[in-house]
Amino acid sequence: MKKKIMALIMAGVIAASLAACGGNSGAASTDSAAEEKTEEAAEEEAATEEAAAEEPTAEAGAVSEYLADGVLTVGTNPEFPPFEYMGDDGNPDGFDIALINAIGEKLGVDVVVESYNFNSLVESIGSKIDVSIAGMTVTEERKQAVDFSDSYYEAIQSVIVKKDSAIASADDLKGKSLGCQLGTTGDFIIQDIEGAENHQYDRGVDAVNDLLNDKVEAVIIDRNPAAVFQAQYPDDLKIISGEDFGFETELYAIAMPKGDTALADAINGALAELKADGTFDKLVEEYINE
Ligand code: ARG
View 1: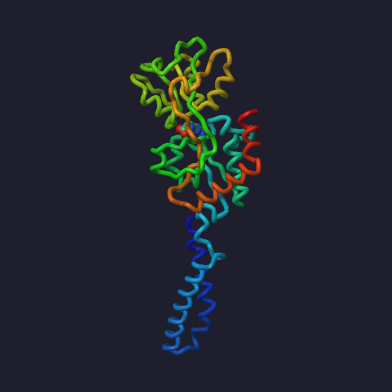
View 2: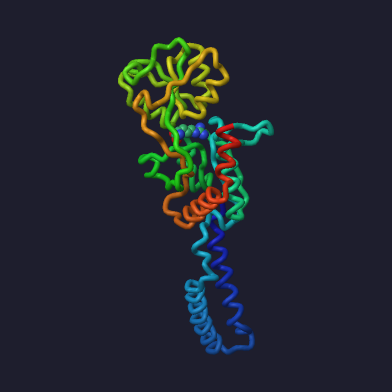
């Protein structure tokens, strides 16, 4: 991301207009002529700027600074299959990565994906990264710091327990030692459970490992990654739907810098096109329903 790009474009416009009307106002001119020319130049410059602001072709102001440099820097936390995980080639892969790449293609920008702890994604948006796609749930609290795109997926938290666990309802979670990924909605749910001991991990898979080791009695994590983790230990673990615990459904969306409507319009427009042309459903089939 290059915030300076707009300043550079404007500087270019001014320089060009000065060059066009300034002419050879140097050596040969008398002092007063030079002054006149300068005034003239200033007027024309102002007129050029006005015209640039009105002309639809010179709509540079409507292009987000985050897209103007041709590179969209995207933060994710590749510990959340099937939405994002480390691919065999050492680069993040998954549904979200494929989706943001398709969005970048629609917008004609290169997408660069960088890995962060989930907990530090929101605070990095608009500085270290342009946007974040990370199976991130839209919450009122996060909305204080970032804007969200139109949502692209509905989810709910699941509860993973050992096969022989007696945990089955919300009351059963009270006073238990529970695991989650730090800074996630699962974490926020545990914080509200009476008497629960909250074990927060940087990675959801670490919470699952401590469940297998009996260090925690349940893990609260989004439904799809829960299914992926449970499937690795089908003999030891089972999943209970969050609906049985009264958890609310959640909506995933791309988190963006606050107040950049040009960026939001561009991303939402691309998302709508991908839904309309079937690309979105194809990615759901490929990464989520396979
Ligand atoms: N949906 C949950 C939330 O927004 C968890 C997301 C975790 N994502 C990740 N890439 N680790 O808090």
